[in-house]
Length: 339
Image (cartoon, rainbow, N blue to C red; front, side, top):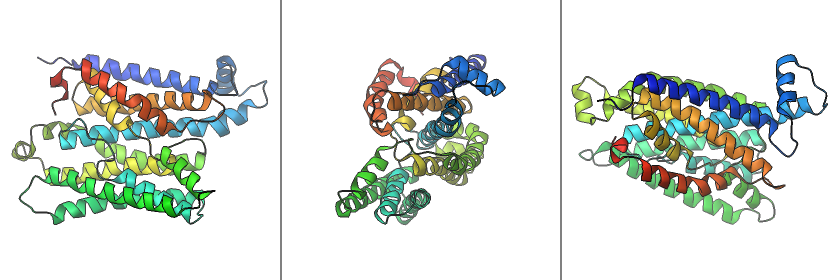
């Protein structure tokens, strides 16, 4: 018996879409400079406004931030759901292969060398992808008669540890008056300095990576039966595994290179959505994108309005991520998490 009827799943995805739209509108209004919702809607629909600050705040300050929050939350959630399906492990997160640690090291080096913002992002993106490539190379170099997925996880742990140590070394030699605080702040994750230039940098990568994942979502379901069974059903598991890893890594690296390291979203959101829409990745991936986008928007609204000093997003997601995961695991039937 299917406990997740298809029509109910479609309704949930529709509801999540409406929730995201509502939170997006409210996010334009929330902040230290509040904008009434009716004034905002009138401006968005007709272009008319009374407050002369409204266009600048809405379009130049808050619009890029809202868009990057949607892309980042959605991308990390889809990447997390993809990796959890690939590794058949619900505690896997998007940085399992070292992409976040690699991106952090690339950004730290660029900051240490006094590079501009664009070079920091390019460096973070390149080293994030490089970390994943290195993980796959180490996996191939290991003994071939072991479980490939297990070896890949171990390789990711090796690469993450190595880049984590390199980040610590970079912070150790950085100027404590200027470079060290900047590196530390970047590593904690923030959307404070995002512009439309960063949005246009991330958007095409996210779209190009999302499309193959959505098209192959039904194949991720087959992987749940195990690699041997998937091969028996005619699935090219090696090619599928590379496709999933490349797309999920591109998603993670592209957003992390702009926002810094934001943890927990790619872990807790797929868990929560699997509890609501079920393990079918044809529904789970879109639901995770919508829920992750809404979640990060809410976190960012809190981060930029709760005090005069903006709180880094990575701190907030870490504080609330652990109890949310505990609650989800507590209330979820165990069979919902069998991959």
